[in-house]
Image (cartoon, rainbow, N blue to C red; front, side, top):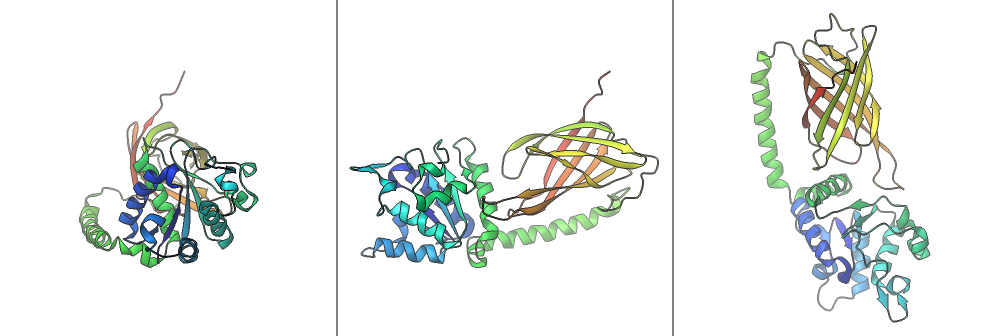
Length: 316
């Protein structure tokens, strides 16, 4: 069973479709992506094959390039023709109730409901993913992370068995190294949720801190952290992408700072919101904090991210 159905127009985005399909099969295994060029046998009925594959897959990607909407036939737009195969693909996918993700390439913009035939109007309400040439690797990495929890176990494991085995070996080695290193810490990091008042404030974190954070999908964002003491409790905010989040469960123990924040993630406009918990562990050294960020929950799986936050000098 193919894991992903990739719908596209050959004269609009065939090059992008081939490039994306190759990357997805490298991630999820050979045969995990259905494309008409590769997956329809000679002599097989084209529409029957598409219907069968749409029923079998776990998710549908609708690739939209700059000519997808306005592609023409003699009497008007191809999309307005009930026999247009792209229209049939998208309408069948929307009716199936499976995740349908628009993928914008070549500078295309998302069409509005009024631009689409009534059968396809629901596509305009789906959250789109943009794949840009200059950020291709990072954009595709984010798409892969969003698809991973949607695909069947078989599709997830097909192209990953060797990588997962190696990852397991490395994780075991990392755990062994961590066990060896633990005795060298002067003070272990505090546990999340430990709200014991700070004793003597061994690390003074009050104030504003900024950091340039490169996330695991490749994008870089300038983040801001603000901490203050109310009595002996730590309060504040931490920005994440475009939002500012309230810190929770904050604690300082020696040179270690730990806190959490919470955000929400949606795969599309029709998908439920899922909570994502962001856990920050930082080692304070003067006017710098070396952070490790671990995020869990939501639709995506993220690797830990390390970055350095620096104190902003107070203005007089």
